[in-house]
Length: 43
Image 1 (cartoon, rainbow, N blue to C red):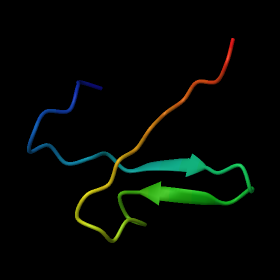
Image 2 (cartoon, one colour; image 1 turned 90 degrees about the vertical axis):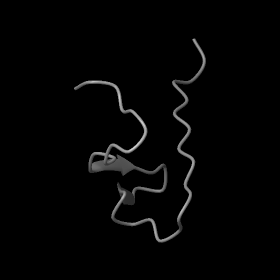
Image 3 (cartoon, rainbow, N blue to C red; image 1 turned 180 degrees about the vertical axis):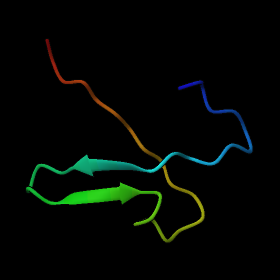
Image 4 (cartoon, helix red, strand yellow; image 1 turned 120 degrees about the horizontal axis):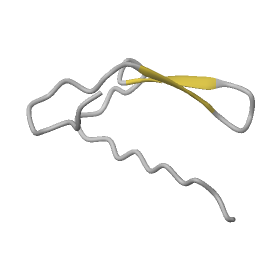
């Protein structure tokens, strides 16, 4: 996959949450602006 540039459509991805549920981006987002932070954890 290539890097996203302004104007590109965000790809559909499913993220598993710690509580066992999941969220599908961008389908489950209903606001105009959303920030997504990926943290790989401590090493």
